[in-house]
Length: 74
Image 1 (tube, helix red, strand yellow):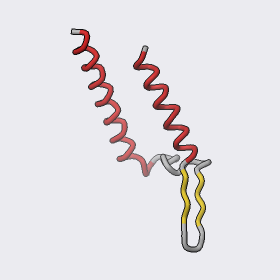
Image 2 (cartoon, helix red, strand yellow):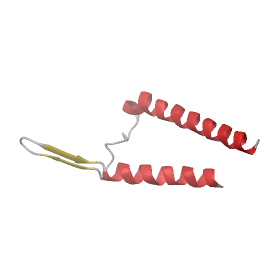
Image 3 (cartoon, one colour):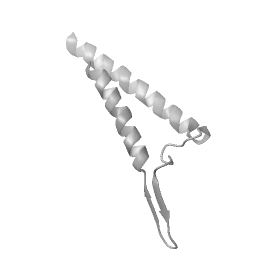
């Protein structure tokens, strides 16, 4: 029964994550700060090329995912 309880919690967490992700995709254009276009992301546009590196977005996602995984380990 312990295995099934852990599996159930994992499925609920995955479902909640998918709901939040879906809401972000639907409402993403209406938010004041767009994920992937945060201040601090590197964006260089030249004549014939463009370089984009989402530095702050990567750091923010890393912190959020680390906190979520830390909470589920407890």
